[in-house]
Length: 322
Ligand code: ATP
Image 1 (spheres, protein in one colour):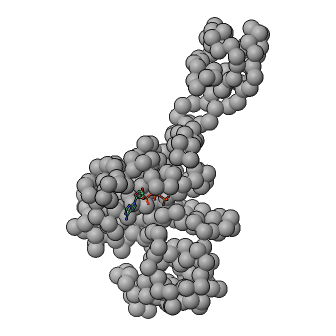
Image 2 (cartoon, protein in one colour):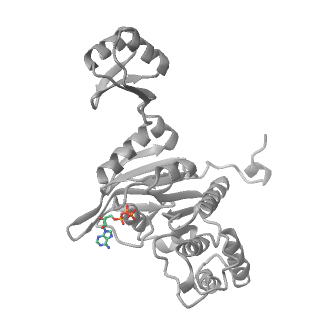
Image 3 (cartoon, rainbow, N blue to C red):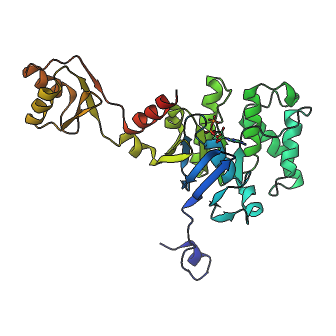
């Protein structure tokens, strides 16, 4: 097989170094007066991934995203975006990044279309004649074409979100950052956002999207970063994190000690967890576990499959908050 370089008559050289991360932060920290909003975050966003930043309200997602985009200055730590350090190379790198962050600054008395035309005028990669078609395409992509002539002031929250998203998608981007993009959207709107994210992923765009809903992250993301009280408590591939901890059965019984002994005698790995028996289902299935207990006359009041790793972690974090 002939390489492209050889076909073109160019001597093949060592391949250019591939930046494997679209964004990275190191020791990122933000303090507001006495409030530590972000407490030293090392976030890694692999190229081509759809990374969900998940966390309860106030956990520091928006503050992290704002620092990542150079919108606010970190108290400490560093940010690398598309292989370049911020803030020194902000101007160079930001045109390749599309962003939807809370409260986009649109003009209330201009229409959606006029607002977008203003945004497009600031895009260095759009030549004059390309501006109108790019604006119309972005409006259609987010389903705002019919309402594009109406004043921004009269837009619903969902329409405002769509317009912000249209601005983020005016030109092809290498990285798209969306802060709670489904805020204010109805189920149909939410599905449309999911489709837009899937389309971006299909063409190789890296997406970073924040949400406080695990179900939403599960539906759209390949990777997840979980924040809690300003810290990153887990990050990695979604599938791996969901499986961490393995499938297990939680059994409620008045006879914990005997139950534990019976399970272990039957070669089933088990332990006591929060007042219940926890049996690992790596080599056995649930009916076998229950049958072993019943045979030994251990009362089984309830048996249910345990929550998967990430689900469990996230449930514990959010339960703690409420
Ligand atoms: P939400 O899901 O509610 O948007 P979040 O995870 O995005 O929450 P942040 O908005 O980053 O969280 O806020 C993290 C913490 O920092 C909160 O305690 C918040 O009150 C505080 N905070 C954020 N911005 C400021 C600010 N400009 N001044 C003072 N405190 C702030």
